[in-house]
Length: 233
Ligand code: BJW
Image (cartoon, rainbow, N blue to C red; front, side, top):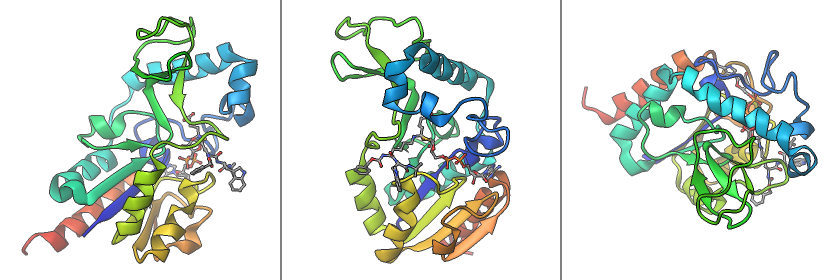
């Protein structure tokens, strides 16, 4: 059985990481156009850097929750038959034990050099515009995918979706493409599609099975179901 799991901000909510679009979400105090577009960065680099510096620093204050840990258990059982793709830029999947995580919208703990196009591991602040350790140019930006930019690794994701027997979407509103279109794409290629989300997503009608509740409860239960089909009774 080949499984593709897509995660969004909702999987990290119970760890204390704010989602984007829920009440009291991350963007409540920020208009999306002010922080999540290349144009916003050109216009106000210090504001955008401060927003991401604060989120990077906040990683030290949060821990993976049972949903992250359950997906690591699934990886241990399925190996490379699991393709885990996340829209999240936090590192909670890795800290929960997942070894192979595809960050389609980038990572907080990485910087992108606009001088040499290199991805540079980064744990500190970028707001003081430090030089790139590779080329020395002071053009490091958050290594994240903003509106109008192309998400990372789309070719690999497309292949995984085409080969999937099961596609599971966890904790995402279905408001942002291309991730919001994965359910229909995987379904067309024959995957059984499952939504695990606190509430119905914008694309809930495209799923074969939609279960609504907290990820910390739904995900471990679903992983147990999958593992039961793999292991002898
Ligand atoms: C829980 C829970 C709990 C809470 N348990 N659940 C018109 C139509 C269609 C598309 C477009 C269009 N106009 C423009 C576009 C394209 C555009 C787009 O989608 N715009 C929309 C506004 C319509 N997309 C792009 O520009 C993308 N690029 C692109 O399309 O390139 C072209 C291309 C594609 C493919 C191949 C070749 C070319 C880029 C999108 C980049 C998105 N970037 C951001 C910021 C990343 C950096 C950062 O983190 O700051 O990514 S925006 C933001 O939204 C972030 C997230 O990853 C993304 C999705 O949010 P997510 O994860 O779904 O969070 P929420 O808050 O929305 O939802 C949380 C859910 O969890 C809720 O449902 C809760 O109920 C639930 N929940 N607690 C379970 N305990």
